[in-house]
Image 1: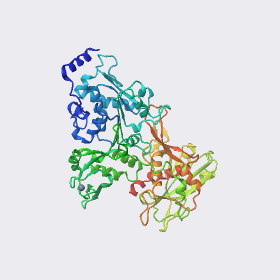
Image 2: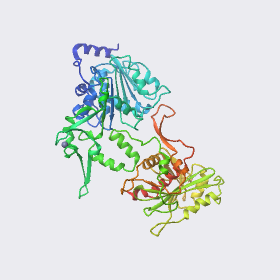
Image 3: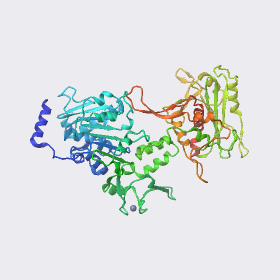
Image 4: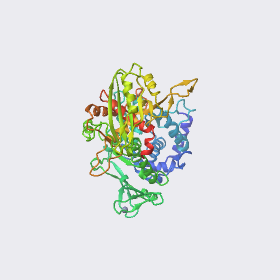
Length: 598
Ligand SMILES: [Zn+2]
């Protein structure tokens, strides 16, 4: 044994050991210091986030609970309570073999350096317990810390060796919804991890995560396997205990233009303000909502940002975020997952083309509805055809698929006098008559330059660049359309009159479109929902099949070392109508529609 470790052991023998039956929250209140640079540095106070007291305490040595699942919002201090405090406790108070796991090498590296190391450095009893690097070669690395009586391993959820290396007593999984679904055919990494605990009768496992998609979320599966505890807090007016629900959040603009935000108690209709939370949280209680699953072995908890302590995320800022996310499905998903700590429900695994076909209306292709404000188009260029869709845009992203053309011809000749290009050119000068008596032209068109790039560029050069855009789809872009990039360069600078090229956020726009398409039609005299798409009577089945040709799937990255990704995957051979639709949407964005429609 090294001299440092030996002197520590002697110190414990002299009676420096903490009292028996200490819980994790007591340990944290007594020993844990939050590092400089954290939001609230200094001694950890469980009273600041009282809802973490019970989840921490059921993870303590003497508790009979074995598995804990915490489905939580971001910015709630869950990593401190559910990951770092248990680590500190099982390093210092009840030394054990500990494994903490994150998704991907980057997260392992980042969290070791920005969470674990600062926690060790700032908390004296831990700093003194961990064996110093100089006394034991390799004893304190990013991935492994040794201390008398145990070790702390930091692992990657994508690495089989990390997960099954040696038996562990304490397993901690952070952000498990980012973990892979399957590890080299060995199954779910969380299940693999639980198997490693079997050697220890008094083992503990805790998983902490924001949720993701309903039915595929790992933390939701854990939450549903437990007693599904929710935090009940008393109304400051009538005293009735209740779960804070987003549906009770109310807001209105005062005559002066300020937004008034309050929470309406469903029992007494009293107005609760953000500052009331201080007392409500103090008196809060976790209560199981799943009586069929009450067991001594598994506990599960869910908590949203509505419970953020005073001084953290406010109700006002949540309302702000909610309003900002309307009509933007990506923002809406993060609001539901990250703030409400609820899973996002894809209404079905895929969009049913027959349902969309059933929505055809009485108007015919080429007719212009009186609510249409502008027209845009998207063109997909294939080897033997060009497919083009013309879309009319109204207010609030309501839109009409005005025309769909399949121009069959060889596109590879690079000769713009060939029929496919002249027919496309004819659309540029075409006029559509609006019921008001005006004529409409195409305000913008996006043409896919992914295939036969030079010819598409050649075609685009004949038109104003703010109206005819050469584009390419990008799955990474988190916006409808990118900034312009010049195609023509001389000596590193783009030429005067250079052609510009744009990226279209394909995945981003597909998510938006599928969210719009899955909405229910309005009842009675209600107006159409945000982003509603209208289809003409004479549109053929093939169009609807193509529009529904892709589904969003969680895919494992090739290197298995990175995080899981969501990707749009083709389920039918042809998907041109989906592409033309989102290209026309990108064209609308490029000509400024997103700004005026709101
Ligand atoms: Zn009340």
